[in-house]
Length: 455
Image (tube, rainbow, N blue to C red; front, side, top):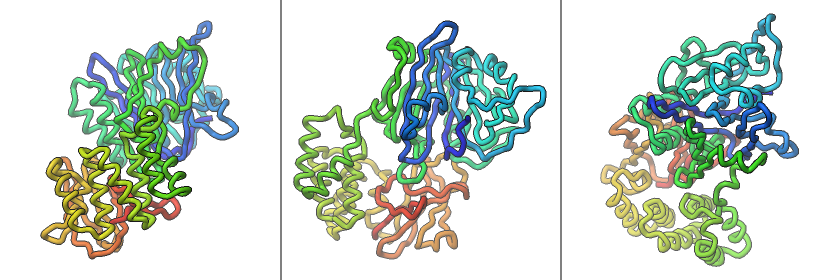
């Protein structure tokens, strides 16, 4: 079987002529869980690693249904979902329903060898996805049950539509990756990470980037990121991992745990003061167990705000601010909490301090009072998009969308919005409805998420 109906992902190849990198964002439901499998060399079979979803009751079998993999020769494979296209079998070939990633990684070293392996079969189940294959020489191909698209450019990016016949559809992720690849000549790890971050689908949303990989194919080395946190990398060297024998490990276990559920449970039991005390204690005693450098604690505070528990949110954020006074994001959310409480002077002081350090700071620009009475939206996201529109209850949603302008790498709009609480989101390239990636206040209805703004 082949993966089908996966919401999205972004794969790109960056080739400097001396080094070949792969970038891979896996985008699915936020609740999905994943595992990495390590398969050492056996007899004539090459050693390799796989990554797969986890499904309750089938975890031990999911290596048979991988999302992708990498072998000891630097051969990489991964799937991107597309709309289903019925496979038309060639009567001269054998039908193959079994997925091919394991067999190719065991037996092939190059894209050419992988395509030769595939050529013997009708991949009858490969109808709702494309299989991307790349090797350490910079060669690559995209395979569907009906077609094979081989290398045409030195660098390449692939997302979630059929590319047969040179077809292109609106996709801000592919356009963003392509735009950034075209600007570079020599690629370093931070360049690949930057493209991954620019093409990541962020929370809140029903589809987010659950994990990301930057892979140096010649070194068989992967830099792994989790849940859109690009400040906490984990490096996996395939050769060293295979020396540990056959084993597997959940991707989540490579990273510090999310502290928000711990805080939420404590708060539900004892209230805000013991929760603050627990946070401070864990910050001192469990710095490796929990990630204190990302947005987990801020997400907890934002949840309190969205539930109308403004005083408790203020107390928690004030504590965060004492712990990390130079953190602009913490300062922003403290200002937002003061804004919700009606403390205009304190809110203005927070936003002024953030803007003094970072004039382009999004949240401070959004919430600070403007002399023009306009609300400023200044987004650095979706740089490859051709059009971004702001829609919300104040535009009648799609009745009068606000066309944002691209200015100095930002999507920019100044809008007069009535006082009160509003719902809004962004329409990208007329196709993608996306919540505000900087705003942790939102509301859900089914699979639909809208960002919240109080003026």
